[in-house]
Length: 304
Image (cartoon, rainbow, N blue to C red):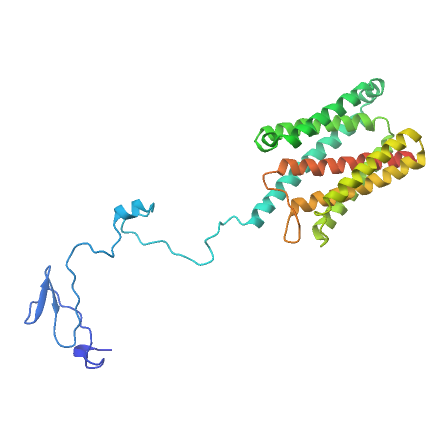
C-alpha cells in the first residue's frame, strides 16, 4: 500500500529516504539525506553510547561470557533443568547394576562347574576341608570391607577390583560346598535359583506393593531365622532342617524383592539406592541370589 504523504494513514506515512539527494527541508547525516516534511516521522540519533546499552566491561563484571555484539541466547520456559533427568540417570544405574550382576553370576557358575566336573579338583576339595572355611572367612572380610568403606566401593577401578576378588572368592566357596552334593542336585538348585530370581525380579518391577519400607521387619525375621538355625544345629532334625531351608528361601526371596525395588526407585517407592552405589547394589543382589542357591541346594539335598 502506498502511504506517501500520509494520505492513507491519517497523515503519518513513511517514505523511503533517498540517498545523497539534498533538498529543501532535508536533514543530512553522514552523507545520507532523510526527507523531513509533512507526513514523515524521522528519528536520528548521534553516534555514541547510552545508559540503556550493555557495555563489555559490565558483561564481564556480571560473569557473562557472551561476545560483545552477539545476540543473547534464546530462552525457552520449562527447559532450564538439566538434560539428564532423574529417569535417565536411574535407567543408566539399573543397566550398570544388572550388567555387573550378570558378569558375577557367569563367573560364579563357571567356577562351580569346574568343581563339579573336574574330578581332581573335586577330590582335592573333599580331602581338604580347611579350604571351604578359608574361603568363607575371606568372603566375610571382603563383604565387611565393601559394606563399610565408601571409597572402596565408589572409586574406579578400585571398586571393580574389590568386587572381582569377592566374586572369585565367593565362587570358590560355593564350588567347595557344591562338591559335597550330587551334580544333579546342584544343577537343580542352579535352575531353581535362576527361575525364582527371574520371577521375583519381574514381580518387584511390576508390583505396586512397596517393600522398601519393610526393612525393619526383614531384619527381625533374619535374626529370628539365625536363632532357629542354631536350634537346628543342636537338635540335628531333618524336619527342622527342611523347615529352616523353606523359611530361609522365603526370607531371601523377600530380600531380593526389597533390594530390587531399592534399585528401581520410583514415585511409589519409599527409599531408593543412590546412583553412585551401583557396586553396592550389585553386591546386595548377588548375595541374595547366592543365599537362595545355598538354601535351595540344602532343601533339594535333604529331600532327595
